[in-house]
Image (cartoon, rainbow, N blue to C red; front, top):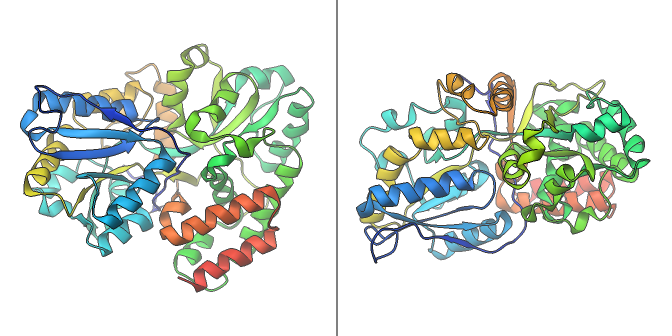
Length: 437
């Protein structure tokens, strides 16, 4: 089954937080006592699936054990960038594909999967081709999916919509019309973790796509001069400013960090009506507020269409998945442990079951029959259908771009949201990053 005819790599990173060490080992030598292999991964989202997978693996395969540490998104992104540059990357490197993976490949920091296993096809044929493709560079697979598919959804609080007698917005005009209706009731229309910056990117990505289609960002990726000044980008900037000025986002959003979960909490504590976020938010909400989901208060839908826009309203943005790559600096023993885990531990039956129970959709072929076996069957089928039927699954721009451009994008977008840059100035500033490429 395909995710769509076109794809990008995607990911969203969030603010800093403490490191959580995984110590699921047998014996006295620690979890990696048999191999010396280690991994770094992210807190939140599908953390519990990855964590429990390593715990079980280390019990069953002590000679190939893998020590794991978990970091908040922003802290991880900074740490992995520094560590790879300094030659201190873990054996298994958590990533998103896209421009960052290409940089790692071009710098000889990761090894192709074909160098690790004898039968690469047997290992990779389980995955949906379009998700697997995000872990490839120039046709060579360097990274394997390690969690669920993650399109960005518009979550909403059904109780609050019932309170004002409204339906979730299907168009941009309907979205804007809801803003004063909620603010008059003392309810923030949208929760967002502005301090983390990356949640703001989802708004720009969807609006540009709805207005101009994926071809607009194709031009950016191709390095076409002036690509960021496309009318769709300028108009998207104007629409963002219109929403901000109308009071669309919770007051003080620039002081809210996504890693803390404070943005999602606004939704399930009835302080915000809507929340634009990747589907990784569902497991986190389920963990923090299980009754909110169990009692049927969490709604979800697609991003609204924009009247007169050229983009297909079935297009989605987000993460096809996250990925494991293997460090080129790993020893033979560490590589053997990583290869064994990727072959026997990653996406085995227990792994898939845990993903489904946590509300995530595995990026695997033939998984449809398993979606109906969980309490989240409606939600999981919705997410799978979005990904399967999307004409375009756009990879997050902060990962599709080079790290240098991605940093500039997040900085300039933050200034667009605050009003420090006008839409015209934002476009000009981003055009300069193409010229500097």
